[in-house]
Image (cartoon, rainbow, N blue to C red; front, side, top):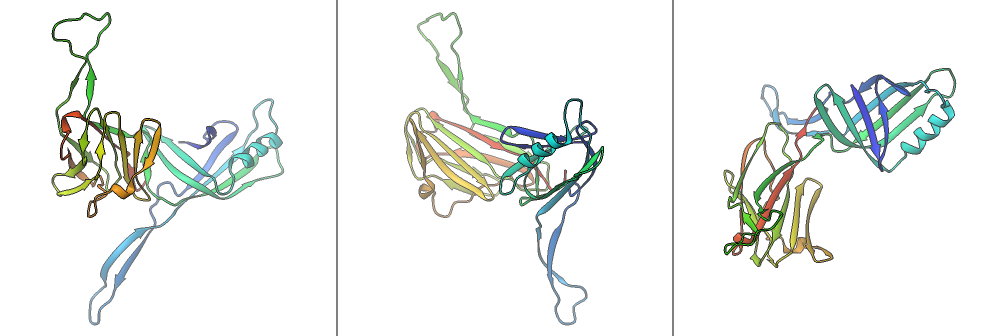
Length: 283
């Protein structure tokens, strides 16, 4: 197993390798939940009310073995410059063919001050306790494929590109964790009120606006990260106020999800791509 902590393009690796020889981890394979229930008079057992997952606490213990040319003091300085309070880092876990990531904040860190080999211990808090896949999954629903080939041969019927006409995409979520979507709407002409429908559940969303050629709208629906942005020429505009009241922040639920994009007009000049990151309760 290999654990890589990353922040601001810097990395520290814990593995069976120098300088941080991994000894022990906790919190990677556990799930801690608070289950709420209520007991009624004369009832056997209790009535289930609900459950919530707690913050994930990942602890890492390792032995520092300095490679040639490095001292404990230099490694310690790098260690405390990397694991700092208030900053968010990403922990990557590699175990065989499994690759997962999770965001963390530092709760505590300790570096032993004496000895030929010195112990280090970390406590990391993951406020979103779900692990994510390292790579996003992308689902083009409608995109324009370029047809220009070099050298260019001009003909009476000259195609610059061709538009994939499918309006639907199917996402199968093999995990038991619901996950958010990133929906990118890209207009090559006028599009009125673009939206999205999950067909089987009949849940939908709509953005009350008119897109013009070159406009891009990016919608994210992840819990704690719901936002709506319009990119027009060089501007980035927050357009949460254009969200249609009563719409649903669509999620990729466990099982089969069938999404269809909509617009009051202009679907023929609208490109749509869905992206989603698989999530898991355990690594």
